[in-house]
Amino acid sequence: MSKTAPKILVYHREADKYVKFLQDHGYTTIQAASTKEEALMSLKETEVILGWRFPTELLALPEASSVRWIQSTGAGIDDLVTDSNIPEDITITRILDQFGGLISEYVFSFLLFITKQLPKMLQAQEQRRWDPFKVDTLKGKVIGVAGLGSIGSEIIRKARAFDMTVYGLSFSGSNADLVDQHFTAGDWIDFVREIDYLVLTLPLTPGTYHIVNKEIMRAMKPGASIVNVGRGQLISEEDIVEVMKDGLLHAAVLDVFENEPLEANHPLWSMPNVYVTPHLSGQSQFEDVARFFIDNLRLFEQDKQLIGTVNRQKGY
Image 1 (cartoon, one colour):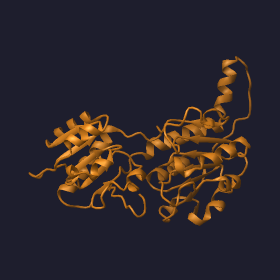
Image 2 (cartoon, rainbow, N blue to C red):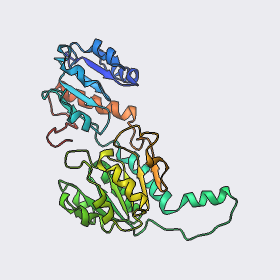
Image 3 (spheres, rainbow, N blue to C red):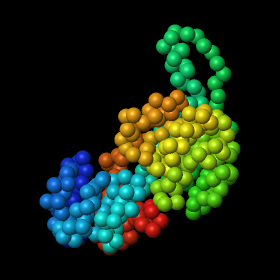
Image 4 (cartoon, one colour):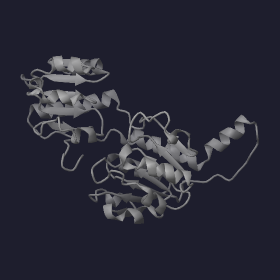
């Protein structure tokens, strides 16, 4: 390791765990913070920030003039990309290739829950009522995955195990070879028209804000379902409330929302066939994030290209 290891500020609720991990790997110039006040006290001469929801207004202060790199502990960085407090010369990186397994498990737990009508089975058991009925299958159903990065690719891999037909939509055309039919940004209506399940894994950019609105949802066939594990602002919540009230979709599984936490009086909480979860489908795993950061840190010390570097113009 370089003798001139950078000074690192860890801003996280589990900051002490990250500090110990870094120390075990030979890094000693580390500060930990979990509040804005603690972060300010540690900013002077800091080059690298590792953390989640760092108070970026501090970056406009003279104490932050040495900061060169921010490593987010999550995959979603739309808040950082649009943050005018972060100088252009500070590199932003996000975690890559760690959430596909977790999020795909979440997606398919709900697809099976819906398709196999588990609520109906559980209700019958609770009522001690023997109630046989015809159970549907995922086999042959069409899943449409919007966003074909590492998360979307893993969802596709698991869909193949269930013998599903896979449609995919990506803006860049990346991983088009993974799907049975590929669509681009101008093809949304054609993309959703025949699918049984729409799964959103897209990043939030100016081009994807409220990309799923009444027009898109009304173009879906009756009985189709939506799963959003991307960003809350991909869907117009006002529109999905209206569509679900009208009974035009079978189910909506929502792990992300326009404003989090979701307000206690929001209608989505109590709507039939709407499943609300508190942004838990792709929780960061400490050891995986820490190893990712160590690998990037060594690249940083050698002035090499960092993994997961964010393109602020593209928004991801």
